[in-house]
Structure formats: structure tokens, C-alpha cells
Amino acid sequence: MKLTFEQEAFVEAIRDFAARERLDRPEDGHSDEVAARMGELGWYGLQIPEQYGGSGGSFLDATLFLEETARGRIPVAAYGVTLIVVGALNRFGTEEQKRDLFERVLGGGTLAIAMSEPEAGSDVAALKTRARRDNGSWVVDGAKMWCSYAHKASHILIVCRTGSGERHEDMSMILVPRGTDGMTITPIPTLGGEETNEIHLGGVRVPEEALLGAAGSGWTQLMAGLNYERTILAATALGLTQRTFDDALAYAKERRQFGRPVGTFQAISHKFADLATDIAQVRLLVRWVASLTDEDPGRMLPQEASMAKLAATELAKRCALEGMQIMGGYGYATEYPMERYLRAAVVGTIYGGTSEIQKNIIAKTLGL
Image (cartoon, rainbow, N blue to C red):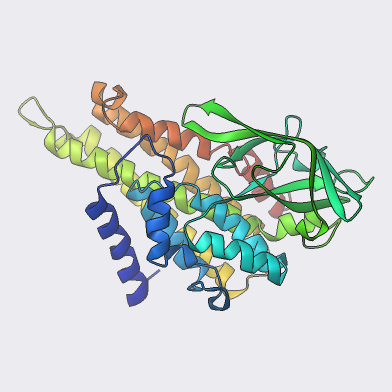
């Protein structure tokens, strides 16, 4: 799939930014300072309509941005989850919600979404967090888990139940500003650092206008965004894969054993041949799904989006494992970034729907 001249120039600009700023800081998953600088360049305006100050741009443009920032290790990891909420705002937000929150994003701000709960992970429809109306407000009670970058977000989109229905009934989305009374955000230490959080909601009160979309339509609204969420995660994983591959390849060309670069041994060179082929295939798949989404934003792509997420995240994990094996002890040492790539890659096969869930979805589309 050939990119336009403008898209190729955009990719080069991101690569130049990464090289010029020397942003190779593994301790920073997300830097507000760097995000603000990218906002000044207009890059946070992707997928935000021009009428709200954004640059518009296609979903394919956004996936290119995600891939290249991950490849360049630019610390704006919260942009992916922000883009998920931006998509929901575009589809269901009021004018007031869009103008307020899009302005925040344009400056490099973060938005987050909270779906999972202690007893509702892959089975999101089992969620128990509830919101009730009270004197012109919503009052929210419950607990959320694995909320990426909630500690960085200005607002968190809480998926909750607003009626007595069960499973897919009476689910809604409510925007809650971080720091609202009754909200407690606790970081969860993980292999990748403290990037995800547990949220406790005890009598959190927000105006009725904080409801995103229609009350009771939360499940439908979630399904409408799945193409975007899975492709966003796939593009990010693809960027991580390419960075992992690039570093391992550079090492294999420089590291000498038995009088020659280790990359010249067939056992190693064939690993790179296989990985290069797989990366090219996954890149085409991700860009194809993004292009299909651009052609018809309302079209559901359960099979295609799940394939992209499954293929990209599993490849990221495999490439990091191969990179570590190729680099030997240096790949295992914390002095070098390969072990960090592996830690980052593993979670990609879990969040946003595990690889097993993606396979279930694909199988279902095949009539199984």
C-alpha cells in the first residue's frame, strides 16, 4: 500500500523529531512536556476536525503517527488511549464536550477510558460500576482496573451501568474529570512500569451533561469504536516491532564472534529474513484496516480489526524474544533496551482484548 507524498513527508518529520530531540528515555512512558511540543506542531490534531482547531487527517494518518512514535521511542504512549476517546467524542459527543476536550488534546493533553473491573476483564458486559441520577447530576460508584494513563488524563471516560438491566443493557459512558471528589487513582506496578491504574469511585458526582451519547447505549457505543481501538493497538505494536528489529539487526551486523559478524551465520540471518517478511505483511494488514475504516467510518470490521491486533501484538512479542536470543547476554541485561522491548510487547497481547479473545472473534466471523 503506497503512501501519498504528504504521508511520506509526515513520517519523515516524526523520525526527524525523534532523532533531533534524542528522546530515547526508557523511563518515560509518557512525557507531558514532549506531548505539548508535539501539540505545538499540530500533530495532536489528528482525527480532530478543523472546526475544533484540529488538522483533521485520516485514520491512516493517525496509525502512521502511532507507528512512528513507537518506533522512535518518543514518550507519548498515552496518545493511543487518548485517540480512542477522541473517536468516541467524534461519534457521540455534544458540541460543548467536543470544544472543551478537543482543546485540551490539541495542547498535548491526555484522555483515558475505564472499562475493565476486578471481575470484568475480557467479559466487559459483566461490569458492576453504576451511576444514578440525583438532582441534575450523575453519582457514580464502583471500581475500575487496568486504566491506562488515568493518572495523566484530564478526563476519564467511565463505562458504567445506569439502569437495572444486565449484560449489554443499560450501559452508559460518563466523562469524569480526574481529581473529582470521591475518585481515587492508584497506580498498579507492572513489568512495564506504572502506566496503568486502579480507580475507586465512591459517590463521584458530575453534571448530567457529562453523559457521552445516550443513556443505556453504552454497549452499542463501545462496539462502534472497536475498529479504532484494535487498529490503534496494532499500529503501536507494529512500531515497537520495527524498533526491536532495527536494534537487533544493528547488533547482529556489529557483533563479531568466530571472526565474523554474528548476523552472517545462517541461523541468525534466516531469523531476520522471516521477521522482515512478517513485519511487511503486518504493516500491510494494519494499513489496509485503517484505510477500510476511512472509507466507511461506520462500518464494523470485527474480523479485520481483530486480525490486525492479533497479528501485530503477537509479532511484537516474537520479535522481542528473537532479539533477546540474538543479542544473548546483552539482550538480557537491563543496560540494553531489548529486555524493555520484551516487557512492553508482552502486555500488547493482553490489553484491548487478549489474543485468545481476538481468535474467538475471528473464528465467530467464520461461522464457527
